[in-house]
Image 1 (cartoon, rainbow, N blue to C red):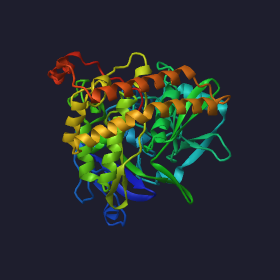
Image 2 (cartoon, rainbow, N blue to C red):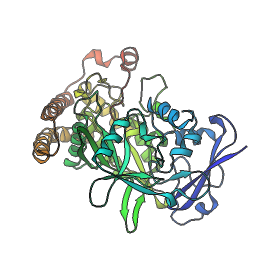
Image 3 (cartoon, rainbow, N blue to C red):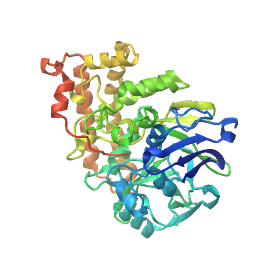
Image 4 (cartoon, rainbow, N blue to C red):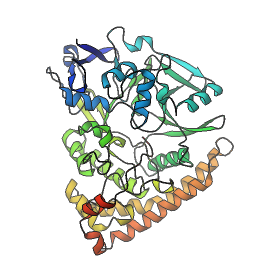
Length: 454
């Protein structure tokens, strides 16, 4: 017997997910005829163009799987919902009313928007929410909770309440912020991510805005969702997809190497996607170039394919989304030093030389000299910017949030050392040992990747 889920955008029918039998092989997606004829209609994916024919199980399953939590959180969510963690259809039936991007996914019947509401949280409520997230990711199974956020870190969607404070979206109401509790095993994780996001904006990169918060003794980070926008009469959802979706890769293959799932997307794959779909290639190529360099310079070892995204607008206008999930990995105990994506085969930031940048430039269509100059420019700019930002955060948060000054000192020290090393390496040739078959060496000695953010 066929079951279906309706997909809507702002109350308009976009398409239907159908399950034709048991197992993930029996799922498909098709656009609604009304959506195909609607002015300004957009595809749900750069891999799923607007067309009348349905998309089969492989493309459908992988794309929608990427909307769900990852790692240990997914089985926990399934357990609380009484649904198998591999049943994408069943999970989205319960969680799909508010997901990344513009879509609302729900059983046939009144659209989720008609049941949308917000529950204001006082400080005690917020403390309880934060403490429950570890055992109940996304608060899955709680009455009215119908949201899904991808990634391996505990988090929940929230909105700013009228008059101040936070509210929990229920019944598919759109969240406008992502609340991330402190990662207990990584000291100062909230300050770390807030600092790195702020530093990106400080030097002119497009990055999500964030703010530090505390409820009781529970610190948290609020990250403004770039896929939500205020408009007259409410909140507009903006559509997006991450680069795992754009590359047709499942979320467990988000790293370029390691983990045993085959090769995931690398830097060249990201540029290939932009060259295929971006409607402002010149802007987006430069923005992605700077993002890659920035992540190397701050030692963001978790800059994998799900931490880069595209925004998809009316008429299939596609552009690179702002940066998000930025964190300095060197100050986190027990985390690999391997970058999630290699620079021409080198996956250690201190071991990237001029030759590696030249090879990357050739692979993705930049002039090697221009890429070297941009690497040098950002490496020269970051140390002073990081020092000034650390001082400003300490000054602005004094008396409001217990910022750990030592974590900002450590991050600033890592960035200064990395920038210095990168500038030196730009002018040097790598030692002969590093010019051996790096793919073979890394496959023998590579440390499994470990999620920092997401």
